[in-house]
Length: 351
Image 1 (cartoon, rainbow, N blue to C red):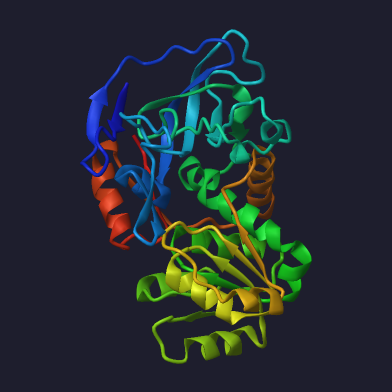
Image 2: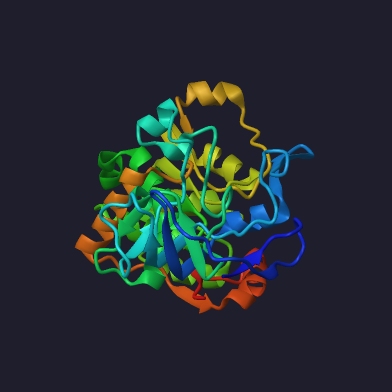
């Protein structure tokens, strides 16, 4: 099998040829049809996250081993199954739930493998979809596509799932009654707009400095898009929302967006942050209590939520975000384009 590997953090990916694994037990081998290129892969490629104050979360120290085959947004065709596999057979097309845990802790027992302290994530802790084949350890992680296009559906495993789970944290009633403010109109931002419409949300005002992505957000249904560099950006946001800001979804997660989000929120407001650009928050702590704010993080979503998401997209026939495709050998160029902010929507690898 062919794959593109991170053999040294920060260095160009290397194409490798290795023996194609043979599934045993509950394992399933799939031929990769599509694998989304996620912003998280940039952090994996560079080996860590910026924690602010000169600190860095080192993936090497957290047990991420090289060589690494990234790719956690993957759709594939089943080509072989282990002897204990049930309900899946060669020829089936499946979306892979990659956020696997140890399978034994309390979080895993509750169906929240994404919160497991011993992750076994496909594309991070074990080989992922930047290859022509991928081995999945158990058939329960394979989600039927319900007729969705494989290339457009691949980002649902992370981009879609992360946004869907984050929106649920606000509660449907709040989203139906109050306009949401979203920071960022990259792949996550466009996905959030589509899903917000799908669950009957009132709408969203997007904060985005890039003109091309701003237009993409308007095309995706944003009420308005505000440039955060404008001197009156906060006033523009409040005017577009039509009153106090009660809910903010930060898909960027840097020092500027977290500060702006805190200042925008009214009493009783709710901030959900899922962006990983990095840095440290500097909130005035008395105001956290005085404004009675809820500040909450979100890390992808659960397997049951991915099933819910695929069902929602299929049943509502939601239009998914724009995708651009490339081959395995072009992943390095695609990562650099993503890092430079030149990607609108999602890049998807089609080996």
